[in-house]
Image (cartoon, rainbow, N blue to C red; front, top):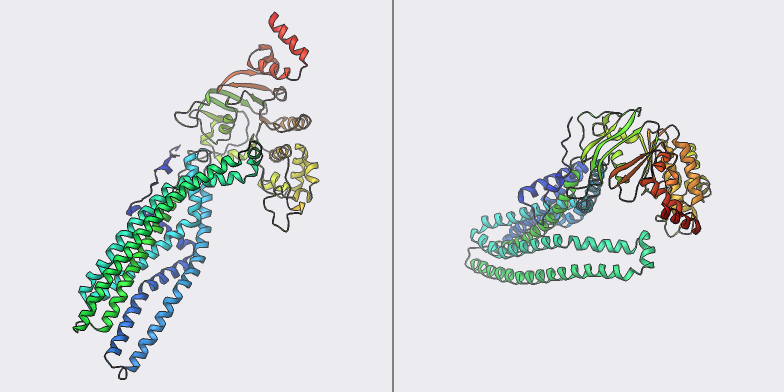
Length: 637
């Protein structure tokens, strides 16, 4: 059996504001391969257009030189045909150069949309492949996932565009330098001197921009957090009741002011650097032009050579500036792509057995053997040496105070986590040896923090068993069992009513059929119905299934759930001990340990932890005189 997955291997990916040349090369190669798989024709077109954009300015400069030289030599009449051909070539190349940005924009749009579709699918396929919860409950991973989502929208496409932009600049640069080397080798030195300041300043500024973007990442994400919080419906009640609006607004503005200060400083540096650069480059270019004119006056250069020199100086500076700018954009995109690769390439978060076993129907028992668990090294133990047997066909109730470890035990039974020590067994087989997908097909769970989906009423129940999503009779029966059928049937469009108001547009805002909101208790019954729909499962787990219901609704739902549990293996978790007294076995958790277990009658007779909790809850329903009698009895005892 193989259990070698390293759930933290994703953290080894580069995560600083700079990445090495070798890493950048690998990332760029991967981005190009993704672009090719997403849209091979569009990617080929982008490559050809980048080639044309790189050589186009050089071709224009050479054609202009040839025309000027012919005209300056007074040979227009004798070489009229040749001049007309050169003019036609100039027109054709000029048309291509003029059309190239528009064609590139169109191709970028086509390839970018296809690429986004591909990388988004791969990202969420990777996220869905995480069988457990450890990654999603890891703050660092969630931060990286948020950046990966941004990268999925922009990163690979910007990597490809930036890489082709750099390649285009290289073609233009070496095209002009090669042209000057053929015409007047000494001019290459002049052009290089003119280009050197541009290169140095642009590279320095691009590094500062990349470092700034990395430095401000957390502040910008906090700004987004506060903005979402201020517009969140879930938080609106407390924000208004407690008067938190200004508090969170001020925090948002504080982050925004910090970001603005840093960006203003960067913009000031950029403005001063590029202004100085422009003056220096202009001075060098002017000096070089004066020298070229002097050489032309001496007959060592033609007028066309001078024209080519002027075009080369401007072209080299433009190409260098574009190369550095595209390189900076590509570098930033590669940083985002790093996060995308880290998420998509992360290994399984739970060990995968070499030969996973189908658990099969539960025939004997589920057993926890000396189970210890904590969520991370250095954190306190949540479960401490738990030994528990859940016999097939029986109902086991789990009780205890908040933090006792009840919900954590449920996570282990669902194999969202593996025990740190000990094991959980299904008919004697360690859950780590089972196929996790097949295991979960044999479970039906109502979680304490159940979900309400922005779907129709029927879909909200049907997602409990996707194979029965179209089984309206089964969905209706499940809703009846959970006590929510009448409420759902009375909705404007019945079970087809959308249980959400977030998708309304202006035209449909007043149409109640387009979406309604349920109360908390109604949502809880829908969640119970979702679990009831999975009525063929081997283990039913009910984690506080009626916590949000009133007393009458709670009683009715428990009657239905009691009937549903008959003859089935079930685990019932509840703070209300009156709802668990009919369980075959009641287990009391305290501080991560089982301190008592037995039937309701035996635990009450023992007078231990369970008995004390039961009497404490019962006194809440007694009259004041009964409380006095209890206290007097305790004093006499």
